[in-house]
Length: 524
Image (cartoon, rainbow, N blue to C red):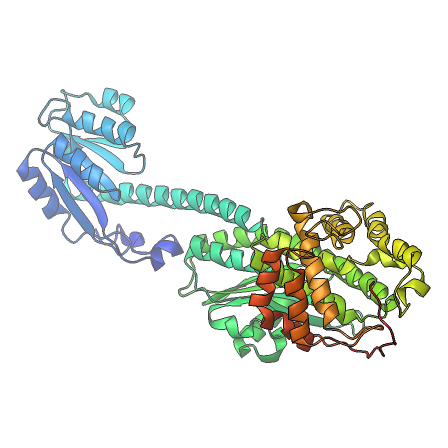
């Protein structure tokens, strides 16, 4: 017997080999107590793939139903046909297959009265896996039956696991495809992988960038969690654990992902000539099935990774262009580039404190530097006039809001459309006395209300061609006086309640040039 079934001791799948040795659940349904005793004796010491048996007994069809209702891990049920009724066993089979919709458990009918339920009819009409006469099931044939049915049950479980795993892969891929930044994307990938395969939460997501000047490759860590969180803001080659660096180099040189005993390293080629590296630790060695699921999932998200990388690069380029244009405008007005940076960051803080959605907050931050873009159409003589503007000059100066709209409105990009809105509305006043349209209260777009306050706050504390910087006390007093007149009161309250955060921006981004104040004052 041992020689006949020796091959069964070696698992056919890695996943089962690595799984805990949970016993195989076998259900015996028969109204004859002696049948239960003989069957248990025949199966004493039986093992399949290193796991023993858990034998459950039911002495009626109804008792069998109760056990099926309470257990979902029954691998094999050996069911008598005639028990409390002549067809109690057949009724139980119908219940398992059709009511419980259990098509995984192997069902074998065993009868001592073959004429009561002819074999051909039972096999044809009922979804069973075998039909045996009790006198035909010798000890050896019974054990042979178990090897066969347990193997079939195991294979069905593997198929279901693979099917469910692929479904989870598709769902997880959809989750990460909604990410809009590499950092958010990397975090989403890690969460989904943990859910899929119960991996260690320690991971590194890195990108490799080609250096056009040196011809070498630069590396950057964009996300790190778990044991690697300390490396989230450092270059990849500087101080990563030696084994991680070695594996990254090996994978990058081969341009192919690789499985290790305690980790998986994904490599995907990037369109810019660089690449993407994902280092995932796992507590135990993955079986072949889990490796396949991991590879399928990471290959799917790699496409999204590349697309997000490209989108982020485009967004960064767009932001650089915005700041370049804003710096050019501020240079004409003799302000510094630091002014637009501080205004942008002050807008971000205000928008977040005001409770705006994160996407809208970031748009306002990135669009606000163009609030004075219309001043490119204003003559230098007016922009640089140290004294007060006359009526005609002031009339022309006021037109810079409309000029800004005219310059930016041609674009359909969300950033430029919002910048156009800010350019037009940031000189409107809460009480309706502003320009160009005399809007009042909440009729003024929130982007314009926020930018107006951030711009004035920073300008009052800055040295300009026509004024010295005001003290913090003077700035606070001016904002309080402007609350409800020039500015929305709620925004002023938020700024003053968080004044340290706003004043810290000047220390973080000081003016890099000194502008000598001229005599006289200016109201533009």
